[in-house]
Image (cartoon, rainbow, N blue to C red; front, top):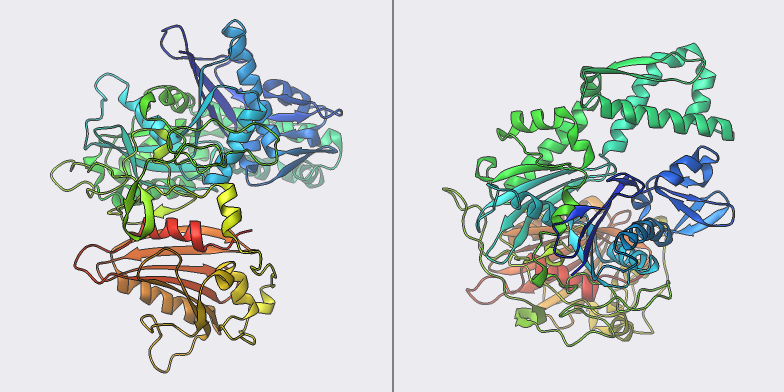
Length: 628
């Protein structure tokens, strides 16, 4: 069995291969364990990658993209005069890894390929990664492994570091583009992500930028105009000089992880700048403090104290900064561990995730990779899509398909984590939906099988409103129709306005505001396939007043809370879901206009809420969230 694991990172890509019964080893590409994830577009459209791309960037930096993964939410990249789809840029990087791996296998391809990804990546981003893999020519079975699960598996593979069921590990992942933190628990069947969060604006690239600004303060007075040309290059020569300076600054940052001081070579007419580790640490201390505070909050949100953790594992190249380890030890009282090359830990760890549990069931990818013309991604057990076998799932209250998960034993003298969180035996099942953040653990989350592309198409009513309105047009409620919808509310309701039974007002009145409070225009609709529930839409006079009202509803439900961003129908915003014994509530709002939707489900028994926050969030994403 030949297994290839690939960690396609923001700055560097690492591949690990196990074949012919030998232990996993890093695949060296161009003589190095790490290959730059960079791409360069030749004039004829050919994409160069890795160190070849970095060398070509000296000739024409406008054709160069050093961090294509950071552009995953964009459809295309403009490289010189070439428009390159993002998935093709990522495919070029994966293709180079596959070519080198195939060469080392005597021309054969791996039987299985495991691709790692941030735990917060939703189905759209994962689809981009999968389509890139197919475009790269990866023909074997492809599995997706969330990075913190892979990191935890790598940690547990070391002698004396085995994670027994009930123990938990915090993964501190400071890469080039982002910072991610997760608490991963060991179960009888594998690993479970208990809590996770991240900072999209913190990474090694941001440290590089801080050091560049510092260097600029030291030398820019010598020739301010020349320095501005470096910061905002207009000529090819200036772009080459800026690129070289960025590489020298990055090299200086890395040197300061090993030495107390170093010099940054500067282009003429500037003199070289001596920088010290103390200066660098002073520059980045506020940002590193944010990361350590987020680590602390994430551990607490998992229901644990730092002392109950089996360890804190540092991964990602930027975690080499000595300041990182010292601040974690100072703030949390736990000395973190870096057991291997932090750049290779995730790729190596993907090999240690138990293979028998890996499936594509929770990837939420379509059966066909849209817009690429490639063949369908092979599907694992229970995956949805036009070519999928019938899913084997249990039935949950409220019409949710899902799976029963084992309990998580307590860790330490206190209850480390509640007993009904979703347990993921392997990579795929450890990912949160989209960017959803579990603010309080205790969520009896069920894995929801998303509708395939064909089913989703059939579900949409052809008469659903496609009219979009600007934020200015929605500042105040306009004329409502006989169902209580303004045009802006119809944009928020999407297909629900046409496919459900709707009437003006708050329906049965269970969530109606107190007498004397008038928030604006409202409409209430039946909730498809969700027993005891209704959906109310409000076009308010004031976004602030509307938020106070919806916050009261969430607080009245009590219990656990789940939050995430959403977008569709030309709108974007955030949703929050809470549940208690009496009711389950999900509120979704638009970010730039006074619009809100409320899913309210009543529980008339003494049992726990009919839907957990995570189940209600899944229901919203599948049935209520307006489509694009």
